[in-house]
Amino acid sequence: MRPIYLDYAASTPADKAVLNAALPYYSNVFYNPASTHILGQKAEAAVRNAREKCAAAIGANAEEIYFTSGGTEAINWAMRSLPLGKRHVVVSALEHDAVISCARVLEKSGYEISYVRPNRMGTVTPEALNAVMRDDTALVCVMTVNNIVGGIQPIKALCETAHKFGALFFTDAVQAVNSLDLDVRKSGVDMLAVSGHKFYAPKGVGFLYVKRGVALDAFIVGGGQERGMRAGTVDVPAVVAMGEAAERAVALRESYLEHSKAVADAFLKTLRFCEPIICADKTDDISCIMFRNNKQYVNGGRLAVALSLAGVCCSVGSACSAGSATPPRTLIEMDVPHPESAVRFSFGRPTSVTAAKNAARIVNATVERLTK
Ligand code: PLP
Image 1 (cartoon, rainbow, N blue to C red):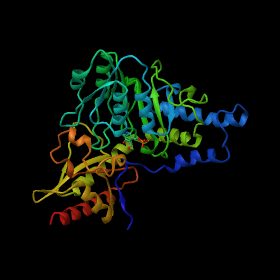
Image 2: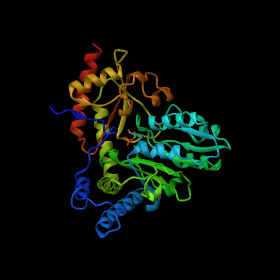
Image 3: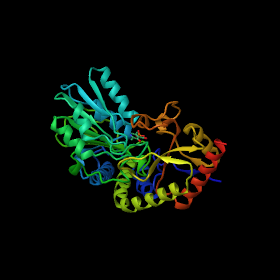
Image 4: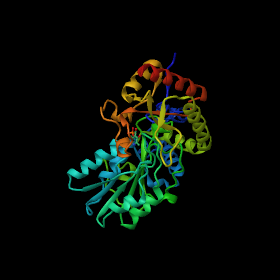
């Protein structure tokens, strides 16, 4: 039997339409978009079109979009290219390792870092942010959707708080593209990072939005690509794929929301022994759940391994931290009572309600077996 994949927060498959859009740029239109001849300009037109599509998906202008190799690079760029000056940075304690690791690098180079904790419902409140803000805060980083529990943060209000203190606001929106309207003019964010492989584009491509007027240093120097800010020949097929995927994510959003709600409801209703982690506001495509039978909590790592053998692929944390013996930081920061018991299930466009119910039955049987 083919395993049931419930780990779409780790990666989504590249969409067929997305691949078809990209394919010609590997062969017939393989040219270097920086070449000034007529053939190079064909590739350049495709890059321009892709940039416009990515910009449109978040309500930005094309010249505010910088292509990167994915979410991690976009995050590194946003956080590690600050102009010298203010020396304080605020990071939410819920962030992905990419953000936390950048904060540690900033700390080594002399920045002071404040970590702002979420409440028990997984929300970083504007009040909590306000309490750690300073006049010398350069940057505030709070993710849009948490990758472990799916919690949605009040980005607009947090951004307003940061701006009140003259700080820039950056959001890691890697897990948000499928479910949320990311209009940067409405939220007011200064920088936003996304990653193609979380919204049905291939791996190895993403983008950073930088609001016009925000001064960032170049991230990779060399040629003049990405307006001299990120040198290196642009991966034309990858950005074409991402442009198509971004456009589709917006067009399919309503049906995605309906679908992920139906799948999550079916999954949760079929599950037994389960204690889902509750957030004040969350997306339906991620469910983080603790399991208990006869007063005995099941270890999440043990359960995920047993489920993989039984035909359900899920995870205990982000794929980037797989193998870590400690539970995800998000759960610890939320004061979840048994974080070591939590398992993350995440659903995608291809997940059917039937597959979700079948997976839940396998989970039930596995939990029962492990707690006998
Ligand atoms: N931020 C979040 C919230 C993520 O979930 C991930 C990937 O799991 C990343 C950043 C890193 O993105 P990428 O895999 O494109 O480097």
